Image (cartoon, rainbow, N blue to C red):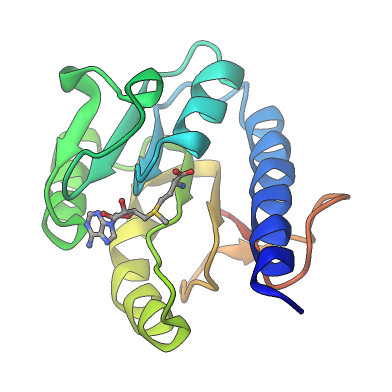
Length: 161
Ligand code: SAM
């Protein structure tokens, strides 16, 4: 598989999983969280398709396309290892949808980080809320869901509280 193939699989899977999760969580009242803004493509997709929910974006340093840059009021700047516990104090277990795309090119490093960040993400979800991730996560009590049509196994993961 070429790097181009892997990249395309990741993009197609992110869109399929996000579309599924957005539809499944539409009736929940809480906010959506985007962990890792990057260029802002997935944030833009969420903004275009989520209605009636605030979307908060977590990022270390904003470097997104101007068309995909959230307002300051919805930007939570800093390392998620620090900002997620603060967010739990602020919002409690209310998130309807959490999308995480925090990894880079080093798969081993991504996996180690997923193990560290999973316990900080799990308590933020409302009951029935969904978590979509580009990396396998390590949750105690969330159920892993089958992938929707179009998503490529191993490129995206969906969990429900
Ligand atoms: N999904 C995005 C898109 O569609 O453009 C790409 C996200 S990019 C792969 C990952 C982003 O996560 C980077 O911008 C990086 O700065 C951010 N990130 C990684 N680790 C982080 C951490 N510990 N705290 C906050 N942001 C982090």
